[in-house]
Every structure is written in C-alpha cells, then in structure tokens.
Image 1 (cartoon, rainbow, N blue to C red):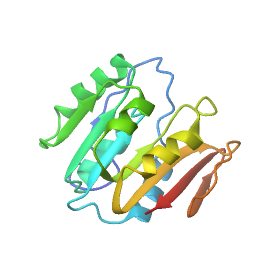
Image 2: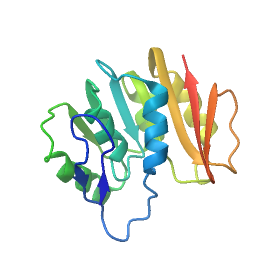
Image 3: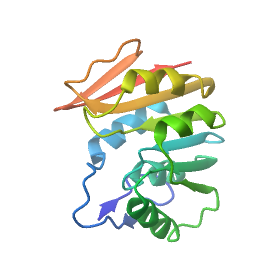
Image 4: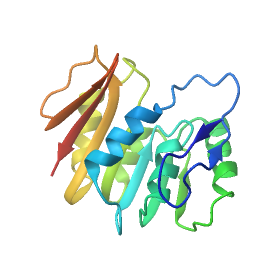
Length: 169
C-alpha cells in the first residue's frame, strides 16, 4: 500500500500487488519531482512504465487535466484501474502497451514521467522519441539507476542509487 503525498487526494492509499517486481517511486523522489515541475493545472500527464500508478495518481491529485497510464503488464494495469475507482476524477486513461510503440504513435503530452526497469531498457532511443511527444514547454523525466548514462538532460536529482533526469522543451 502507498499513500498520495499532496493535493486533493492527499493521504489516500492505493493498493499494490503482492510480489510485484516493480520498484515504486519513493515518497521523497515523488515530492522532489512534483516540487520541480511545478503546478499541473491544465496539463496532460503521461505515466509510462506505470507499475503501481502512484505517479499518475499523485499528478491527478495535484490538478493534472488528464492522466494516461501505460503499463505492459496486465496484472499491474488492472490494479491501477481498480485503484482509480477510488478517486472522483474522470480523466484517467489506461493502455496496456509496449512503451516504445506507444511513444512513437501517441499524441503529445505536457509532462511525461517514465520509470523503466533499471538497466534493461534502450533509454537513449526512448528519450529521443519521447522528447518529440512533448508540447511546447513540456518536461520529460526519466527515473533510472545511477549506473545508467544518458545525455542531454537539463537537470539531475540524485536519491541513493536512483536518479531523476529532466529534459525541457
């Protein structure tokens, strides 16, 4: 179980599946991310490699216009859908898709948050495609292992062996 940090759904809990293999974004990481990106009013938010969906739920709580969850694992996606029913918010969208294929074909977003499995993903290619899907003034944030190297980001925040990398367009 995880709690939403801030906003209209503050302190609401979401259930997570037992024995899941994803690493949910920590509370301190989430706070730093949302403090850095600023107000979400009228912004579209993509939570890709959504896992628990906590980032998307937090974005909705903080005023995002709409939130899209993309998660290939159907068990995880079904848990996100189940959790979404707790919230009075009717702008959630759910996709069981491969992240690379989704990002190539998707519409644009104001904020894209991606938390792929550490060190298992072609992140440079993903970043190149994701940046093309940002609206003007948009932000892409990748949560990755501190061992992974990516180029061209505008800001980095470090949390132990986790880095948050930011690109602005």
